[in-house]
Length: 336
Image (cartoon, rainbow, N blue to C red):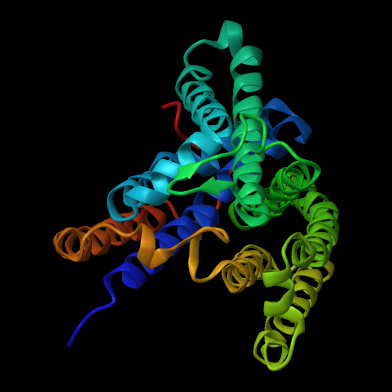
């Protein structure tokens, strides 16, 4: 049996990126909500709720970047020059954020500086991820086998909008996480945040969904011509259903609904993105098969991935299991 190795690797990378969004998205969201929490004690609880898992969540970002370089070197060679600036800003922001985790507990005299670093890093990392997403959707200018655009092509009204949209979406994830992991006053605050960010997320999902088809005739045809429209119609219908489920969870204050439902909502958005981009890995320029490394290299890496991915999933699941339950004021946490 001949395996379509480029397609398998495209699926693995897509899975890695989505897991990153689902996991690191909530702790970036907590960082975005951090300055709006009422007291320093609430902020301590919020940080302790993500402290045991935040660095493990970023494993999936490394998988996405390293996998793109190894499995699709042509795409990497085109995408990186197009997105050097947002990628560098994102990585520096993650460094600021990581330093804040370590220092704010030990350097109390400069706690406000480290809190600012945590918030700034969370915002810039999220916003730049949204910029990268928007640039992919709007397309990258390619001539031959090289990037042919300018330094600032990634900065457009559409990409700025997707950057803001991702900040709002991650904030909804962060709200759902705080609802799951906290109680009392901070939980009540998280429900208020969830109400506002859910409204914002639904708004931006609508705006992106309406704007994206007009970026390219090909994307428009995928969504609005027959018979394609019959195959993709379940995606917006399911999105409406999940949005209603999130609204119900907020209205009735059902803690267990909001976070997983938001992940499903983002997953449907991810599928919708795939409908518009497939079979391209560099939108409307280079296909998955054109960008792929030789099959011998892909097979060699696939063997390693089949060994490592279950291990990563296993220790990730174990860490979440060990640190399950509510985080309360006064609990021993990351700073101990």
